[in-house]
Picture 1 (cartoon, one colour):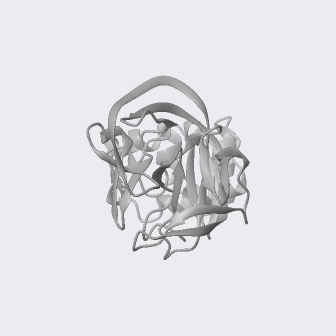
Picture 2 (cartoon, rainbow, N blue to C red):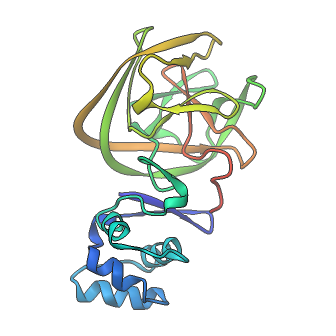
Length: 235
């Protein structure tokens, strides 16, 4: 499952439905209805939202044989916006549902957060402030990565989740071993171990504030960057 942003709305799409042959034919489709009809012939059901999102992402993209392989089955394929497994904005940055997020007066499981809920976040200067959940990302099923920190904290997240160290300073957990992580008290902990479990679970994420905000949450007391980074909203 990957996620597209169309008109500010989050749309999850199961890209494993799209075969290589369908991807090639999809380039010739001019409307969502044409793509839906094409998919139906191949035994695949697409909603109008899914079709519109898929067509929007294919816009102005010329696919060669290698790129077609990436389109089929859910891989990232917009080459101008991908770096390894980090896609903009299709690759999920999420946590398992029981992950505890700092809120005023305590913590709340990320799966229980709703639009309008208040959470602890940071401004661009690093000052702790109270932020508001502006959108909840639809849950998806992803491979779980366990990240262990030197203070004993364990994150259960996805490989494209980012750790937040300061304004425009972040890095992916898959590359995090030996690097520092920002604690809520202003100190740091070191990432001591990153384990790809091979197990898939439902994961959750939220958006904090608006475009200009840092979109930071504290998960088990450690700063994480939310689903969007600077410049990725409203695509």
